[in-house]
Image 1 (cartoon, rainbow, N blue to C red):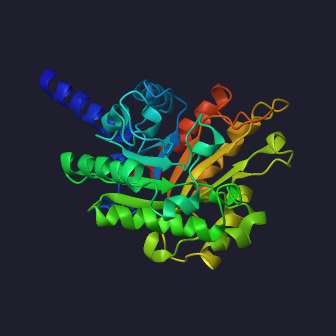
Image 2: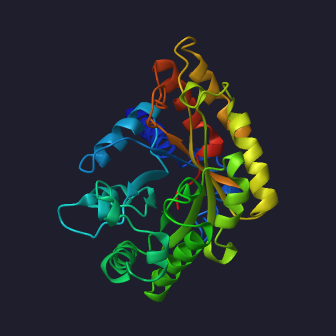
Length: 344
């Protein structure tokens, strides 16, 4: 009887760990256990991920702490890099740092690669026209392409989501014109392909802001150059001096517009979603997050959703989970079956 009891305990632990790892546990339908697509689309539901604030040296530690609070492993970890040259001491320019490689063993990575040199002078900042002309090929683009290729070769072809200059609609005209962005995106894409990099999922991410819709259409590089489309929509509230908006109000209009004007079939990613905190109504943020799973299931083609657990610049712009009630709402969201799919 002791042996049977021990076996039962072990079985319970295995099931609990399966749910914790985001595998969906034993209740996942057979059709949802099929292999993911070549573009890392789950056969059912959506991946769950997050941007977790961190220093370059403690990414794994901060991700582990976030996962402990929500009670499961993230499917996708989201990080940022600039276009500085790769050096041993400057991690900002290293796509796939050692911390990212460690997390990538059992999580997917979304690498946001910005055409900036953080902390550099204005004259050092890359422009789209220069990128498209090949001025960054030898020192930056080719180096990063080979690093990502090597990562795949050392890890059974492991793929990464890569976004070049996310929210590019906010960078016009400082970085150049819409046409110059498209040329730069296509140049980076083609350069990777020329170097034999086949483990990148090209993820084009815009704000989705309605006031930018005409510009966003001009910035789309074309279906042949994009694998996933992402958009970043928030309930900013006092951060942008707007009315409080529900999760559905932030996501559904943009989703409909993208499906009608950009692509009716590309997999979609809520690459950043989140809500401000209403200090006058401390439970409001938690209620906002409780709405997410029900709405998410109605958004056709949304195959990944990443919570932004950080702040934006400016007063009243802290978008992180504000209190225990909000963290509890996030735990419930992260445990929803729709967001618990077998890993690739």
